[in-house]
Image (cartoon, rainbow, N blue to C red; front, side, top):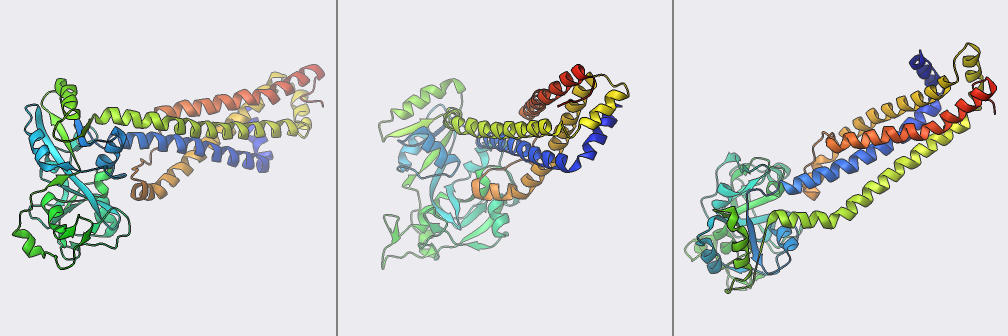
Length: 419
C-alpha cells in the first residue's frame, strides 16, 4: 500500500518530479562517467605493455622514456648507438630484445621502425601476443604493417602504397615521396597504442633518410632513389629505444643497474610497472579533484531536492491530513517521503546508466583516435557499486530531514503536516 501511495504521489507531482529526476540523472551520469573513464584509462595504460622487463633509451626521466617508447607521446632526448644495442643484446641474461626507431609519421600516426622480433615478443594485456588480422609481417625494406586503427580510419587495404612524413606532427612539409611503402599486413586490434602505429623495418627507416642533411631535410643534389637504396648498407647507425625480456626475473635489478652505469653511452633502463606507478601517482591529484567536484555536484543537487521537498510540504498538507484522518500512523509520513526519494534516485540511476552507455558508444571512437583511450561501453565495475550505494545512502540521509520534520509535526498535531 505504501508503494502505491508513493507512486500516486509522485505522479500527482510529475512536473516537479521530472525536473528533479533530470537534475539527479545528469549528476549521477557525470559521476559514473568520470569514474569509468578514469578506471578505463588506468586499465588501458597498464595493459599497453606486458612481459617486458626493461625499457632502455637515452638518459632521461623514466616517465619521458615510458611515454615516447610505449605510448607514442613526446620525443626522445637523444638516440642510442646500434653497436651498443648489439652489445647489450648479447648479455647472458637477455632472452629477447625489440629495437625501436621513432621520429617519422604517416598522416598523424607514428611510424615505428623495428624488426621481426617486435611481432614475436611484444605482449600486451595479460601477456597476449600481437596477431595479424590480414596479410603477413614485413619482409622487404619498403613494406609496412599497420595497426588496426590506422587501417580502419584511413581505409587502407593490403597492397596499397603509403607515403611517410618526416617528424611526428599531424601536418608535415617534408615527405618521403620517393620511397613509398606497400601495406603487407594489418594487425588485429589490441586496445593499445599499437593500433595507432605504422610498423616498418629498421632498414626502411635508414633508406628513407639516405641523402638527408642530419636526417632533417633532403640535401640538394644528393637524392638517393628507392632502387639505389637497396644496394647500399642499410644497417642502422642509431635507434631510439629498445625493450628487453630477461631470462630470470631475479636479475632485473642487476641488469638495470649495469645499463644505467653503461660505459659506452649514457642510458636509462626503467621498469615499466614502476614508471606506470609513478605516472598514476602524479595524476592521482587530478583524479581526486575530478571525483571531488562530481561528488559536490551531486551533493548540491540533493540539497536542492531536499529544499524543494521542504518547500512543498505546505502544498501537501491536505494530502497528509487525509492520510491521518483514515488512520495512517505518523511514521507513515516519514516512510512515504523516504520511499519517494528512493524511487526518484533509482529512476535517476537507471536513466544515468542509459545516458552513459549511449555516450560511451558514441564517443569511444573519438577517444580512441584522438587520445588513445579504448573505453569499454560497460560502465559497471567494483567501485561503481560503492558509488551508487553512497549516492542512495546520501539521498536517504538528506531526505530524512524533511521526512523527520513532517513526522514530528504530524505526531504533535494529529495531522500529517501543520505549518
